[in-house]
Image (cartoon, rainbow, N blue to C red):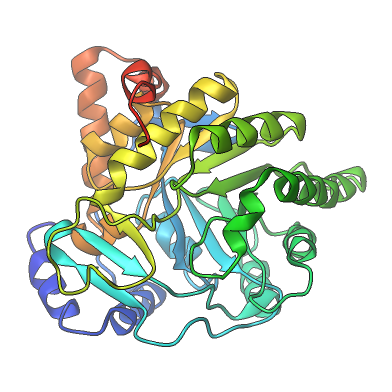
Amino acid sequence: MEALYPLLRHALFRLEPEAAHRLSIKALKSGLMPRPPLVRDPRLSVTKAGLHFNNPVGIAAGFDKNGEVPAAVLRLGFGFTEIGSVTPRPQTGNPKPRIFRLHSDRAVINRLGFNNEGHSAVLQRLMALGKGRAGPIGVNVGANKNSEDRISDYALGIDVFYQVADYFTVNISSPNTPGLRDLQARDSLTALLAAVKKARDDRHREADPYKPIFLKIAPDLNEGDLEDIAELSHSHTLDGLMVSNTTLAREGLSASRHAGESGGVSGRPLFERSTIVLAKLRRLVGPSMTLVGLGGVDSAETAAEKMRAGADLVQLYTGLIYEGPGIISSILSGLVDVMDRTGAASVNELRDLHLNEWAGKSLN
């Protein structure tokens, strides 16, 4: 598969990015997507936030926005997958074109704007999945652009998807919905976390199983912001943090004709800053809280380094675009090699090995 994907990628990259993405979703739906060899090793398993993961590598929200192919993604070998972001009402998102590939940087700029089919359509698909899943399926909840009460939108997402989600991600870090990142400010975040926790706790009191909630944050935060997020995460007994979403920064990009497009940058240029933020948060929240590392994960070494900087789990999306579906077997095989070389009994033993090095770096 790895040998064939460069040819397939050449064909896909001749298509407009959203058309190429739709084609990938259709291939997964039809079962025509070639499956990479599965890598199974008990040392890869991780149990965090009350969930068991066969391996620590998941697909981030954005790939399967509408819950069309979660089972197919898991069959590729990913340890977990995340649906969304999903808003209460359907919305078309921002005008096209709104996705731009930066080939030389192994990066993407997007300004999608939470385009999705809304709660009802996604809920029906997830209900049809039934039980016997190959791994956890999370739901990433968002707010409508024109919502009069965005905090209520997030709480509603928790309630609507409670029966079908294994975990929730509260996404307040997309740069493509005006004003959304303002919810990361201390007062707004306090109200938001109280609302989503109440929505979860109300369902749990009704004898529904406990479902963990993660907060997805931006990389474009300062030290004071991180301190506030860590403090509030503890005070509201948040289950974990996802670090991080796309960045508005343009440092390190080559002179691509699309480099000046507005939107969030994902992929390889995001790796360093998102990993610094991850490590600083690990220091702030301590060893127990679950942290998921995102941003520039496209190889076994980048996945391992996220863990060495403090991540329990990692997610990717842009790496899949450039490396193809074989990326999961490549990463997992590489992690097994790392454990073989170091004598690690579990992938968990990689965590925090380089924490001080990354946490000591400046965000400026």
